[in-house]
Structure formats: structure tokens, C-alpha cells
Length: 386
Image 1 (tube, rainbow, N blue to C red):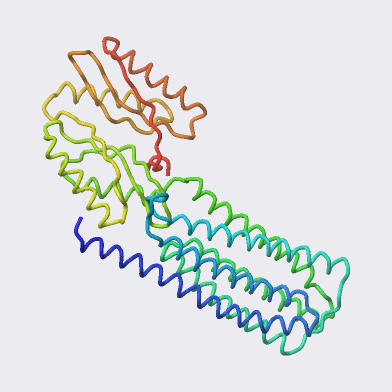
Image 2 (spheres, rainbow, N blue to C red):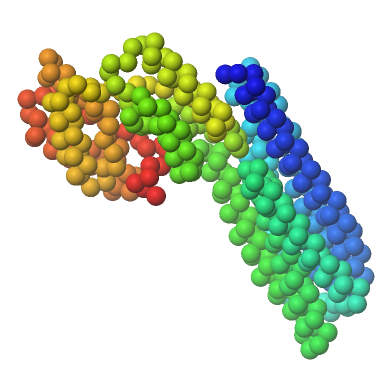
């Protein structure tokens, strides 16, 4: 792998880091400004909604700070204890932000319920109305910007912060609506609106937390990522098929990958070695994915019987419901042995039963052969399951 390629990737990673930090700083400045004015207005007008909105802005400041810290930690170089780097620190920061949002929602709900039980007459001033209106505009712009940037640079922390800001704009809008209703009809609804919005915030926090925990546990990669890797490897003319892709997630845009390729049995060990090296370079250059291992299945381009048997066995296996794929075929006429792998969908009520049925049908068709069939897991979400 050339030093130019490594430098390009390093530059992209630094640009991503600077973008996240810059966006977070913009969020901090905007939220400190809003929190200060909302706190003053909320205390002077005795408005629980505006005061809680101010507190929520300060939680957004904390979220932005955590995003910056998480991004800096994630950029630490690999060490003896963490040879694949510290990229997952970003997932931890995303989880902390989700917990903050969840806590803010629960706190807001409790305070709103208190005001429902013991109502307090708000005193809305023209200044309060203006500030809340400005807050709505600022939060919509800020939330859209942060969320859009987060998606562009694949940062869950920024996406969560942007979503939180947009939720804040809804809170502010409900506060403005409550103020207008109170001024016109003298009906105080802000505590009730606060309770409703709090439930929405709690729901959003739970969804964010669930999504981040799923990353830490080890969820499947997206169909798009798996397809891009397959397509990249299949650009090499010697490769006839790509199977058993396994991805390891070490942080946003930090994937390691292994798999199997099917190549002609006429390739020499030297040619296979060169092919694997070229595939590894191409994957890293195109997608920044590190290829850790690439095993080989072979097929014969000359043996007509092997080709016919392979096609028949694949057809038999694929005729069983929930079998997604058959691959890795090997025929040994001298030992009377057949080997192949099948992938069974996770949607199958009993994956082992599906596997046994496929083996039974193949064995019935080829009773004179010793059969070795492996039940594979599709880690990368094959196109058949989209």
C-alpha cells in the first residue's frame, strides 16, 4: 500500500475530526447564548416551560462537549491494549448523549406533572415571546445543520445532538403556542404541553440509546456497505464469487473485513497471493476497509462433470425454503466426496431443520458420495434478505 494512499486516508480522517469539532463548537456557542436568555426570561415570567427549555439548552452544551471529547479519544493511536485503535469511543459518547437526552426528558416530565398538580399562573411578556420565537428559528437552523453534518461525516454523536436540537425547537414551539393561548383565552396549557413533549423526548432518547448500544454489541453492516465490498472484489476477473463476508466495527468508518473468494483451480499460489494483495489495496483505497483475511474456494473450468454436479446440487439446496445461498463446492471423485456450504435465513423457524432437509435432499440425489455440508451464517445481510 503506497504512502500516498495512507496520506490520503489520514487527511480524510483529520478533515472528519475537524468538521465534528467545529460543528460542536458552533452548537456550544448557540446553546450558551440561548440558555442564558431563556433562563432570565423564564425566571422573570415564572414560566416553567421556558426555564426547563433553558436547562435543556445547557444539556445540549454538555452533549457538544462530550462529542468533542469522544472524537478526540477516538483519534488516539493504537496501543498495546487496543491494537485496532479507539474508534469505538465515539459510540460511547453517543450513548452518553442519548442518556442525557433521556434524563432531560424524564426531568421535564416530572416538573410538568408537578405544575399540573400545583398550577402556577405564568406571566408572559413581549420579550419572552420574542426570545422564544428567536429560539425556535435558531434551533431549527442549528439542528438541521448539525444533523446533516453528522450524517455526512457518519457521526452518531452529531446526529444525536442535531436531533436533540430539533426536539428543542418543538418544545419551544409548544411553549410559544401555550403563551399565545394564555394571552388570548387566559387558559394555561404549558404544563400539559410540557408533559406531552417530555414523553416525545424520552422516546427519542430511548431510540438513540438503543441504536448506539446496537453498534457496541455488534450489529450487521448495512446492505450498501456489504454490496460495495462485494462489487469491489468482483471487479477482479479471476474472482467468480464472494462469500462469507464478516465485518468488524471499530468505530464510524473503521471496518475490518474477511471473507471467501471463488477462483479457478488453475491459479498458482503466487497468483493467488498477488490477487489477495491487490484486493486488499483496492478495498482500502476505495472504501477505507482493512482486509484482514481472504480464504479461497476453487472451481474447475475444465471438468464438465464437476460443473454439472455443482449446478444440480445448488439447485437442490436452493429448492429448500429459507436457503439463501449455496457455495464453496468441491468434488473429489477419487474419495467420492462432495463438499459445499449453505446459508439459511434467520427468518427460518428452525435453521437446523432447514439445513438437515437440504442435506437430506442432496444425499438422496448422490447416495454414492460422502457428503460434507457446512451451515454458514450470513453476517453481511445478503441481497436476498433485503
